[in-house]
Image (tube, rainbow, N blue to C red; front, side, top):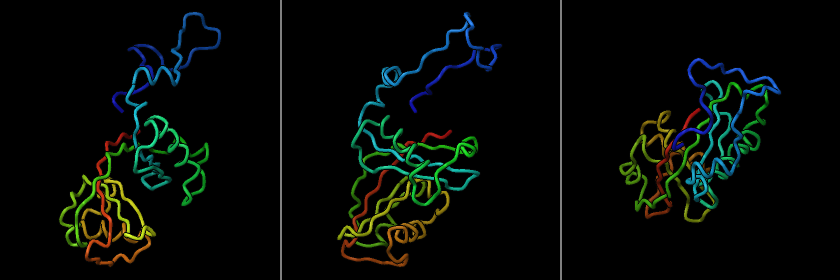
Length: 192
């Protein structure tokens, strides 16, 4: 995320772990405190999503749109939730773990988009850049797509249609008069 956490192996050294009791090996001890001291930005408030994919298919995705806790704790909590609490999937098993790709998206603060209707929203969107939150003014329907969804839905009309459906509204819904609250955000994504 602003660099990697972990130890590197010098050229010529084996990546095989040392045998227990080996006197010549001094493995670094990684602690939460040590990570935070090396990466203080992880202790600052931040909002994130953690996305798990298996062979290119979604396996779990959980996150928050607003920062309410330190970013490091937010990412750790969402990583666990994406693996075992995404209601769309069975919990990830230990056997699946090696097959998973993990992406962490750190979100900017969502900013309001002053649009009166769907056509105005679609013109304002920046494909490949904007994440989008749509919510009806009554607050009963709300959904978001991360900017990465543009890879699958590159046209603004399709992007908005699928997000409306995700929110439980008709994909063809063409509102007027500011009936929807629209907010956009960007992400910095990190993948393993």
